[in-house]
Image (spheres, rainbow, N blue to C red):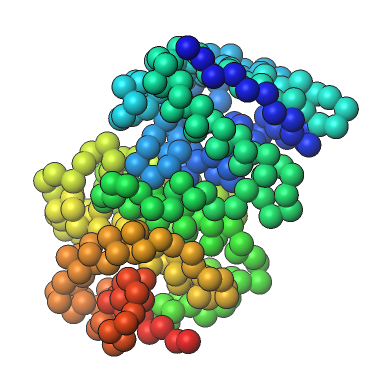
Length: 326
């Protein structure tokens, strides 16, 4: 069976093609993270929602006109990567571009599930091209169910990139809750942490220091999260300075993404929008990861006091030694 739908986009064909192929544009409406090797036979891997990763290879590419790629999931749906085919055709019209998406090679059950997904994301693509505010955060990515080290990190990355997307040059020298860092320096610290973790996992990580903050961090986080998801949390990982349990490394990665999302939001006057499902889970990881020995090393200050009525985000932030001011 197949899914077949046509929508009208109020943008030119080249812009539409960019929206469906470029990682930075895909993150606006369809993915949390994306790896794209846009050539015939090249592979892609998209974190569509936390814990759910679509993958396949490109079969046909006509810039501004047509793209064909195989489609499947790393887990779930009983549809392995490459097991079905998606064809997207772009046709210019008087007011923009007609986009037709055909997904073939599905069972009846898979067709129903994918119809729900494609309708959701095509609606978001319409919003991204039609509204000044764009598609906005994806509610499907807010609260992973079930949640684990990996889906929590994916969800935390989505929150972090949403904050960094609004980062401006004027924000660079602003103070952050990490007293030793300006916002620009904190960005460098986070980039260094992701590069170190990714490198220890064997990921191909490169730091594009000249890229916009969101693009820079996404470029480091995507391969790092992909590597740890594939490796799993068994055994230990040689971090260079020490051999750490993989569970601890995964916990550190979650903390780097979510706690620094709060740091950047606080520094730039943004309200951090994050599900209690995610903050509660990462708080639990923090209580395992941040031991007295870790605090004594200077990596974290003593836990700050917090009201008994505090929510999980406040408890998480206070446990990392940061003070929340109202």
